[in-house]
Every structure is written in structure tokens, then in C-alpha cells.
Image (cartoon, rainbow, N blue to C red; front, side, top):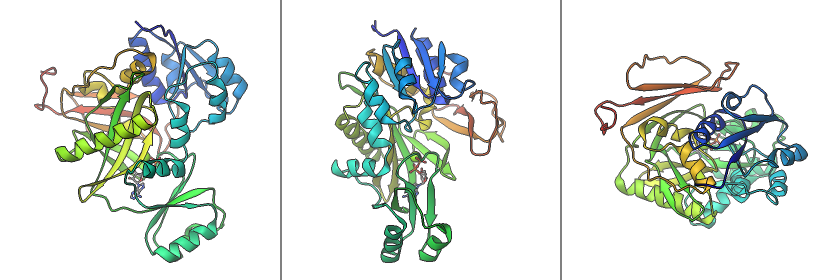
Length: 356
Ligand SMILES: Nc1ncnc2c1ncn2[C@@H]1O[C@H](COP(=O)(O)OP(=O)(O)O)[C@@H](O)[C@H]1O
Ligand SMILES: [Mg+2]
């Protein structure tokens, strides 16, 4: 039994919604903090506090009745969390959030651990960027250091004249310029680390993005055993060095059998949604277990599975009949580029002992 009763989640989107369901499965009460009253998590949680993520007083008041606090996204002002953590435990640790929410700190942290990334450069103003693009003669992706997600805050530049065209204002927020890697595949590893330092990893997913947004995750990833093991090892190294507690998602590029870490997310991850239907334990329950001190389960995959995001629509193009499970997030407005739901399609005949 865990002494934890009340779990707080900062953020009320689909990840908080699915985390809330796992809280309920384990008998916990869940309390959401987010600005919108009709957020996806509101439909499935015990209470919701509406407030701005920067409102330190409201956040502190919200956390008073909780036993533990977690979060579903990176773009939270960490100085508020630093104050709150004097009174309540926050998992994953705030340090991992601070590193992950700044692409320059994140990539520097990876390099310090001897982990390969695509070459990147800190660019603080437009003249840094001009110099770099002129000198290197490579294609770059300019990414804002903070507040980017789903490909937002990113601009690709092919060469100097492309740069001049795309940045007419010559004013840029603090950014990094990353060399474009013509990768063979993108994969991700989702793992959980508990308070005792024990780590359990899920099967690797192979991810396709469209316009910077995750479109599908195919599981298992079609990669060699060695690559899979190396990706898990790198992810474990990241989690251990952060003294991480909770679920973490690590995104990789694979090129000529070499792995490059693209980024990591200190939270449950979209490429782990397949675990809801093709695994003995979902990433959401595993996260709640990790942060509440319950033992982690050893993930066991029941079947091959494809996860497709519903982006800007509530409908799938193909008709998925049997062996598929649809999730809609209850968002009131359908908007282009907005994640509205996902579908897990269980592949028949593949490792399906429990689904027959
Ligand atoms: N250096 C790169 N080379 C090639 N493609 C990239 C590079 N960086 C990002 N991408 C593509 O853009 C997607 C989104 O970029 P990412 O850095 O993961 O930002 P976000 O935080 O928005 O997910 C990646 O999954 C990948 O498909
Ligand atoms: Mg990403």
C-alpha cells in the first residue's frame, strides 16, 4: 500500500486525462491544475483548479491538499515549482524539467554524458545565425530554446538566402541551430524509474512525424537487437543521471546504425500510447506507480501494435474494425494540428496470446 492518497497534476490535456484514469485504477484521488475549465482531464478527475501556470500563489494553494505533485508537460515556470517543492514532493524532479525545457541545456547535458546528438549551436541573435549559416553551408533547423512542442517554434533553413527570406525581422528568441540529419528512422524509448532507482523499459517504438507532429508509432520498431539494447542503455543513463522518478520518453534518430538522441520528455510520451492496449501495464499506470512508491511492473507486450494520432480531426481515414481501440480526448474544438485522439490497432496473429 502507498501512503499517497491525493495526486496533483499540472496540466489538463490528454496526458493528464490518461494519467487520471490510471490514478483512479489504483484508488488515488486526482486533482488537476490548468487554465481551462473544460480541459480533457476535467472530465475524469476529482477536482480541477483553474489558474495560470505562472500564478505561484494559486499553484502553492493548489498543492496544499496534495500528497504528491506531477506534471504532464514541460512548459511550466520552474521557479514556481522550486518554491512549492519546499513543501511537497514533485516527481519527476524539477531539475529534469529545467533541463528538458531548454533545448540548449538539454543537448549540453547529453553531450556531457557522452551521448551523441546532432551538431547544434547556441544562437542568441540573428547575427550569430547569419554567421553560422554562411560558414557551415549546411541545412539547419532553428529551434527556440524554450516553449516548443509538436514542431512549433522550429524553422528549417536550406542556405543563406533561405535564411534571409524566412527571418525578415532579424529578431529571434534565444534558440539553437541544429544541423538537419537525413535519418533512416526515428525511434523512442519509454521507461520508468522508481524511488529505489529500479528501471523498467517498454519496447521501442518506431515513429513517423508529419510537419513535426507525431503521426504514428509502430511497435516493435524494426531495428536490430543491438540498436534496441543500446537505445535502452542510453535512456537508462539519462534517467539515472537525472535521479529521475517517473516515466521518461527519449526520442532518437537512427542513421547508418548510429543513434542520436533528439530530445527527452520528462513525462509520459505520445509514442507510448500503444501501452494502453498491447501491454500488461500502460505507461500511465507505470508513471503513477513510480511517483507514488508502488512497485513498477515488468512491461510485457502482448501483441504488435500501431498507434495513429488523430490530428485536427475526430475521424480516421481508414476504417479500423476489430482489434482497434479509439480514444477521443474530449476537446471541444477541432483545430488544425491539434491532437484530438488516437487509435491503437492491434496487429492480428502477432504475439497475441491474451487477445485470442
Ligand atoms: N536535426 C534534425 N534533423 C532532422 N529532423 C529533425 C531534426 N530535429 C527535429 N527533426 C524533426 O522534427 C520533429 C520534431 O522535432 P523535436 O526536436 O522533437 O521537437 P518537438 O519538441 O516539437 O517534438 C522530430 O521528431 C523530427 O522528425
Ligand atoms: Mg520531439
